[in-house]
Length: 240
Image (cartoon, rainbow, N blue to C red; front, side, top):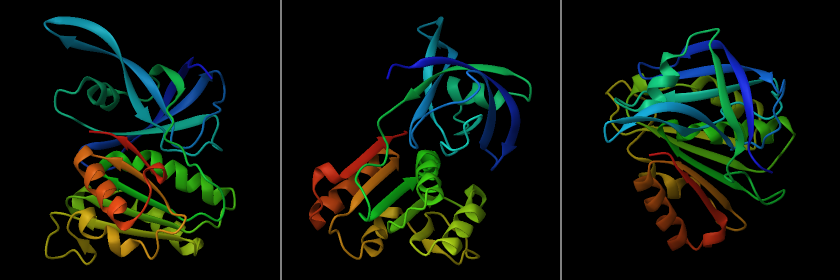
């Protein structure tokens, strides 16, 4: 399916942390989107290269699940000097935003009852959040394990939502680890690679989905391969 042009309008902007915002876009044309959890849209932004300005498409994963067809949510951290994140963080309610959709192949594969391991760092949680909510809302009972790495307590968001999902769905387990936690933090400490093997009771029929920084993806992928998981069962998308 080729990418289509879409027009939307900002209806809500939430500041999740000091440098992370969630932007809700109401669909105008078409009035609803058909996409798969994990896919992204491409937003055209102006950027300067070699002293010249030009338009360029910037990809942003959809945080909301496919069942929410008339509104999509994007989530982005502000990167100093980054044209895409600067554009998204500057958006105000009522602004019209054109984009291309649906794009990307980072989607859940396999079938019930294959266990799923999700590993994310930073805003790499965005497509994974859409995947998990989509699976659970459709009644999936596949065992799902999410390990998410952030730096400090002030960087945390979406905690309440994931904790609520874990309470409501026994098949879903959620752990958050902080690499630069203060003495007040009572959860896991350290990088996700320090805890990944604790999250895997068995690699039998396991499928892994990794999203975030490339260093994490390389390390986790190597750990899973050494554990015996095949390459074809490890899916990833690099954010930074």
